[in-house]
Length: 420
Image (cartoon, rainbow, N blue to C red; front, side, top):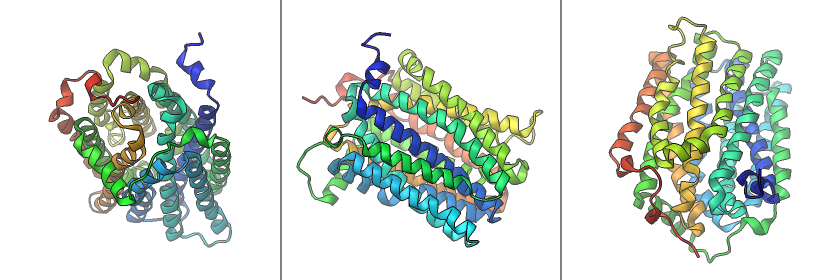
């Protein structure tokens, strides 16, 4: 370990330590809320398949409305202000759920509203966090910093789902929301301690809708960004079908308990921890672009044990755990491999808008897939819906093979944006 070690350098940056803590706390809170919303709807309120799909869709749908505007705000405002505001909004939304439950007033529409508010806050938090990272650590250290953040995310996600599942199982109530609210409050305090001057880029601002058009136009005009955006959108569209039926398949078809389901997610998250440790080595050996191609092709294969859980010669919980482990491993490796690409092909003054524009497309299709998946699950069943989602995800390989990036190993220097 030397002074030149990237991890040591990152740990010596005070604002990165604060951003790391805020990110870790915010993400574990989001993981708690996501699990608690769906399981509470199924177990405590006996929601239908379509009601669960609507809750899940609202929990992922804010990018359709706020994705690009959030990028404009992130380019114009200090990131820490947005991070704090997002966490306080999440604190209020999730905190309202146990209050309503203990007052015997919790309803499915209340969960829908909580999902919508937390989704909006998640969008603002994620865009502000991504925009802050290059200015906090420097554009050349974004990949290493993302690996450190992914490692923290995966580690806390091991603890989060398991605890949330046990709390819900023991109380038959959304008790996990109490912990979630406290976590989001702590995340806001960590973000508030960051230096505002380190998270703002001073620049003259064009009109709001001009900024929106600039972000969208930049993404669609750049072949590399456009290809990854379309491939990711295809994957997320398929993931929407899966998310609509996944919890219902586990709890109602496989008859797993909420606690067992939480433990499956927790064990599966160990794959993310492993990925955070090996991703940079894989990226260096295979190449940042080629790693993305390989990971995207492997996602449908990794998920297959889940819908096959009823037919494999092992307990269903084992099949689900294997699928979760492999998915976390592949997705985190892909995320880290690509994290250093976008800052190098995007001008700093456009980074927030471009990031938000890309995520508006890739994340915006997720709730659409979820709603379609929820409707489909009521007609053909949960397991067939999971297979439909898997098939859609497999189509992302067609997007990749039809683009010029197939022959790339790493990002060519001529595609990088050089700043003074």
